Length: 266
Image 1: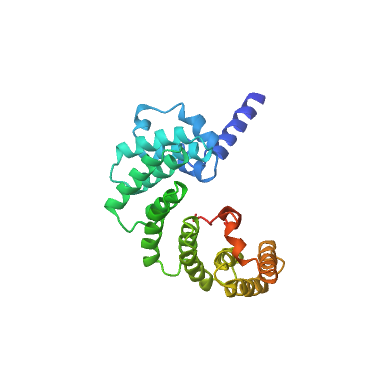
Image 2: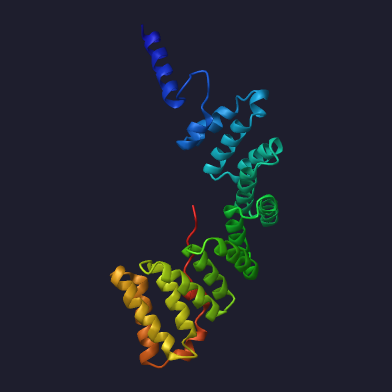
């Protein structure tokens, strides 16, 4: 009797862990539920036929990536690509994984493969621009972001990213223009306001009007975001610069002090 009860318990657990048909292992469902360890544990029992199944290999790759084991994920994704060399999704995934592994050249090559087949692919263009930014190739990043921006005129993330590139290149008028475009699309966003204000302060060495404009933007942003520490700090800095006539000293402030990490798309 006890043995029968134990057997029933085991079968019930199997149904909970592997939903659906008990004879079929639902790989993607487990990945979707982030049960990565269960997927990887079952990978040891793959048959030769399973190893040539694109969906199974892709699910195992996703499981390894979900556990931040990027090299293993990369190996499985490359196997998937060998099964379907025209699949742009797996190329984008390979590029993303290569980026996480620090293989910038491989990532760039995969993104370009995607874009050679679909030049308007948003994900590939955006991630390639981010890759250029991370590598310090800001002019290339601007070109890639502006190409996307021309097709997505109301995307604040792109304007913000362009502004960050120009800031890193210390081209503050261009950065300010980009930040203004982002801010005008979403005046309630505190991060956009801070980026714009900081850029205006950098330009304050040539005219105190930029400082006053930055303070005014802080006031507007604080109306939507009362008590925001970054905005209060920026407003306080602006008041100090204006009242003590320190505009020309702003240029000595390291850029990294004024930079705010740009947001990412999901």
